Length: 484
Image: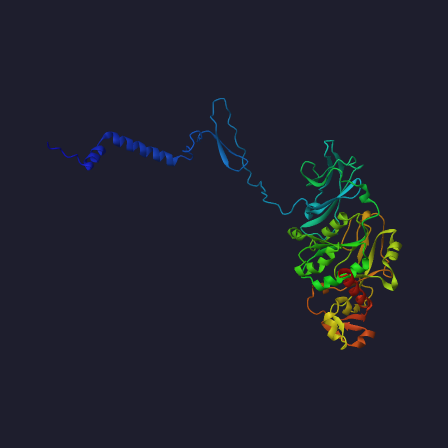
């Protein structure tokens, strides 16, 4: 039986195109696509529940900043609210980010039974041109009601701050807020301005149960003398650091301690020079390199000295502030104990400077071959002899009577300040020698200069060998102390 072949496919398609239903459907699709492209808002094909109306719709913005649409149907009873006309002369201001933190905490310390100190940085423009303030609150661990106290702020950097200024906040309560020794937290409210509505609240100190010991805040203290060093930065010489440490551990005696702050200047070589004294318990080295994130005066020196003041406020009878290119000296056979006993009625005293040349040495053929083995203060023996000029002074302070301090003295103390001290105590300053790694003797003068005035760049220098005479004693002390 013969089968008929199937009709050609082309023929079927041709028949379909001739059908009226097909043309009707094609026209409908074309109209829909035209309307779709002309509409200003259209149905979301992924969500049938979200629709847009061109006749009645309200646009809103949520907290994430994404525009959302809500559908509203106008009825005859609803009244249209006309938008107020836009004033082209009314300007708006948009803020993005922040230039400086409201407060940057470095440390918070108990200063006695009822007083605390919080040391940190704050945006300088806010405190210079605004009126921000602080409030303290003690929150006990045992669920008792908190105790509040208004804080007293100090700006001890003498206006030298840059983006940030140093802030010391004193919190003094009527009584010991941790009298039951149950522990608690010290909270600080930092306000942006005069308004009490805008502030930041954070914990600055926590005291564990049983941690408070009143004996820590009265004599006798752990040390007789404490050294608080400024920020160590730059390419410091390990040899000069070794000499400085040997001299001052001898000068202050065994009941003393040294606190250094590494702002990038403690290289592996400098660290190695300090390490024997760290092992002997004479040195504390703190890493403060993170301070570089906060632009203030000279590697945040004012911040560092204030933190050291309060961190060790009750650690020693006297706290000394001077630099690692400076050497404290007692003239005319004075002893440190006798001098400080005479000054004890004052909270602080300042120390006059002997400015030394950091390049001049004696051209002595008998000594020249030994210069490379001599210590810096042993061969730099020429002092600037100018008088009636202002030179920086350094100082020592009874920290228990100070609320804040500076690089050269404190202006926030209880008690007197003594300046007339030059016959009792002085310091030798070898300016710029601390970063010299090569030979210090870069300019030699004849032996005749020992008994005459030498003029270099219009500055008169005279021979001064007071420190040189002490070199053999210091070298022997170092050998005995570190290699008994």
